[in-house]
Image (tube, rainbow over all chains, first blue to last red; front, side, top):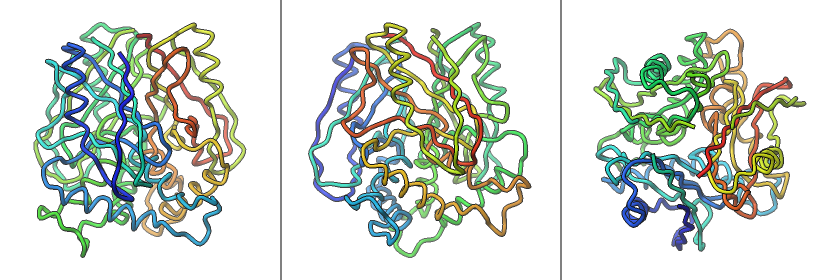
Length: 133
Length: 133
Length: 133
């Protein structure tokens, strides 16, 4: 019960809601209860769970992360220049573990699962696994 | 093997040790070895594992997180004004995965599991699941 | 299927690639598909997944984390003086959950698993568990 998903991002930094894709896959697998691991396959893109109602939340989050981890830094050595994206990935996490109950992800009213692009736009991949209870 | 726990927080930001509650539940389940996922059901409260000995550690952590993610920010768009709480949640994580051995959580000498309130005081919920080995 | 690993760190802050050790253990266990939880047993050392190609990435990451969480802070109360290390641990995470497929960890081309020392040098431990699919 493993699957690799692909997506194309359209901005330098973005949060893309992947909740529906994950729940669709749970439905296809006919899993009622269990857990799911969702993992980005990149070092400059992560996974997080956060607000899915007001789109201003993700705008604010990405803006503030840019302030804390500025793209340019006088002391960075990494030639690719994307150290900030690596840091953001380790901060939100490259992966998340989710719980499945009654065929759905256990999420609060305002929670959604996001693929976090920190060095786009690019073609990206994430990998998921389900372990039934 | 899933359960929703409730708690009431009493401050704007706080870290509440939930280790004993989780271990009590493992004891009731009679699970010897396995894993546990503990997930906040909110976008402004998370779960982390950190020091459970000197209470000054959590005071310092919450103070410094407030500096990094100040409550007020001139460019925030989100009308609720709690962008900082969303960021702190994605930083510490909305959930943690723990290992169970010999009927107890595998934690180092100073490690405890914390529910992190970042926009309280409120009534809150977290959900846990155990998968036996 | 649980094991405690030990390692000795040699710097105050460092990221040590533990991917090969973890894959060696998967090989010994003869597990083909499943998941693995890897957890630091300390409150001043964590686990993260990030770039394993250019060593400048980890140098940059550790340098920038030092800026965001400076070792000295006028308002810190914790007498041990290592609040910064506690914060870094909760930021990258004390543990990570990994997926196993075809006897190997599911990692992107540039991803490696790191033990993150934030208050060394010291003797350290991490604990891992595998759940076969």
